[in-house]
Figure 1: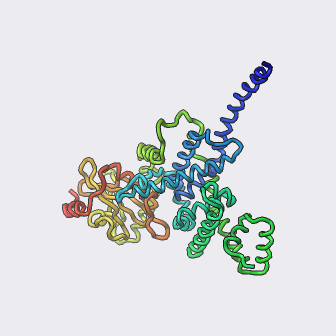
Figure 2: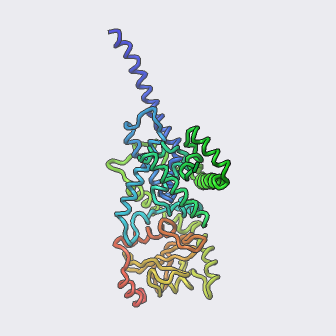
Figure 3: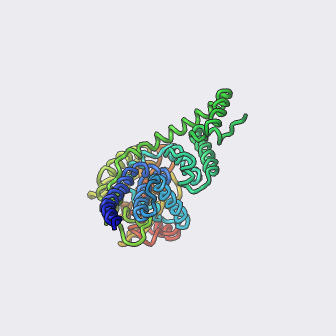
Length: 181
Length: 240
């Protein structure tokens, strides 16, 4: 039973390792928060709403942590969760449209967030808002977040060729809108 | 060889292998139009990056850190974006005084004076018995205008009836958005928030200052706004 004895040591150190990994996972997410907020603000075009999306993404990621493969990129994985949540949200919002204020309009933007949003709004935001969602996310991932085509395509879950064409169409539309503004 | 837009974009984003990269570089060297398109691509990227950079550099709000660090605080059952929003809206409503009476009001009043100076007669707000009341163009619009008509200088967005039976109306000017309720023949200002419209004069959509005011309005009248017939009747009855 020589092997059992040998095994017993790794078990203890594995526990330690698991602990380190656990914190590592959370530290990793905390370190990503500024970038996640930026992407969320770009997707939702509103900082306060972006933070809601960000919070939701964190909660979803913690619940799904067993699905994350250690050694793979945590950032792409988190971006993918966020992006999918946002797509779900767009679809839900489309179903929810009402004449009176719905939860969407009643965001309850706090004063701090409201001020930030106000300073953020400008030509760029308005131009981005006019892009189709699929072009906006492609432009944001490549130009703002700095992902390569393959990484961006993996986050979105589309072929690289599709990503490339959406990106270029979005870029051209944005360029035109900003030239005009 | 021709370099299409996608090829040039891929080059600008460093997505080409060495052979393609060399071909694109040769083409750019020979064609000023391609060089110009590349410069435009880079300028756009720079503009977008610097636009979003502040968001990435701001301090992260505690609630996001807590969401990571305090999994014990995680809610039971399914969490969705609606629940997250509703929670934030609830917290915002729990401390309304902070932003009504604080800086927001001061800012609104300062902007309101600007609005008033562009209209003949009174400024848009006055004080009466310690209460802020509508005057001038805001008072006139609240009293006479139906929702959604006559967008300048004051647009009334909707009317409702609160739990006490008072009529209340959400309005928007170029500089601010507000909620006013009819009280003793005057429009008492319940809420006021600056930033109702963009600098360009275009009215901003919900989610901005109006979104906050609309949320407050909804809290007052959960069943919703008056329809056009009800609103007309209320106006013709002088909002009593």
